[in-house]
Length: 342
Image (cartoon, rainbow, N blue to C red; front, side, top):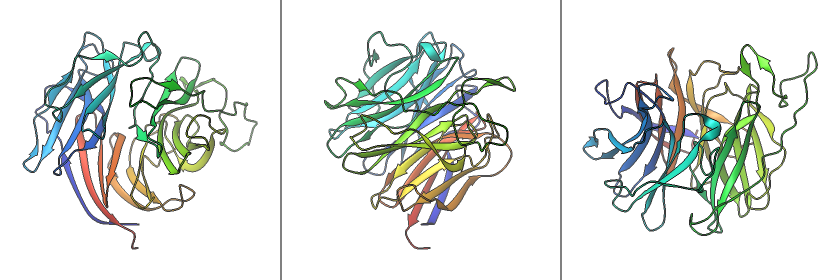
């Protein structure tokens, strides 16, 4: 897989209505338009952090507009669009991650106006539905939302499934992990039990990104505290998952995302860095033509010192649309055109 053309833009420059921004999401609309969203405020977790968005047309990006606000911090927006053209914005609300509630608002006019927010699962705490990365629709029409829970003791991933277009959701069990202490000299391939390490808890896996390789066979890649990206697979439409295992690609305990192209090629965006809370640079795209068994064709999005993190990626034909956090000051956007040659 080879990148034939590439262009980079900033969705906004230094003039912006918030001091800090993070955790973008992107979706393709019709007529070449794109919609993005992110959270922005004084700093992550502050009470003035709201959900913001911008629309890209042939004239460029619109000014950032507030899509959702509350008197508590908001987090991790995820955009979705159904076959009727209805947009859904999912996001987290709450001061602390373990007490997050997942909120939902919809738009029937491509994001110009939004409905009053409601809870995805009334009374839920911890966060159901998509936690960072986009939902996918399986071949049988089921919506699959990549989810995870974070507590002080551990991190765990699961999937929320909806067979009725998002009206109701059923969560799977947690992705199985092998939690065993490592012995001296043992390779860093297994999840360890929670423990203190340089002031950071070693907790597990979160923030899955999903794809379906053939009907009923669903896969996920996961952010981990174990220096590498992990994977789990399902043979029953995402209802149950195998024990998570390392795929060997480095992970710095930061977010990743993946898109599946029409020919089955996978495009993965991540920081190729190991270490818990390791540097969030560089940021690259790599490709797989064998269902994630091997990865190559690296394209570098960022390589300078700084924070380039929490990517989001969607595919349309031979085009990839990517957004990510740029030093917590901007949201960057790349458009890549790729081919199978080279």
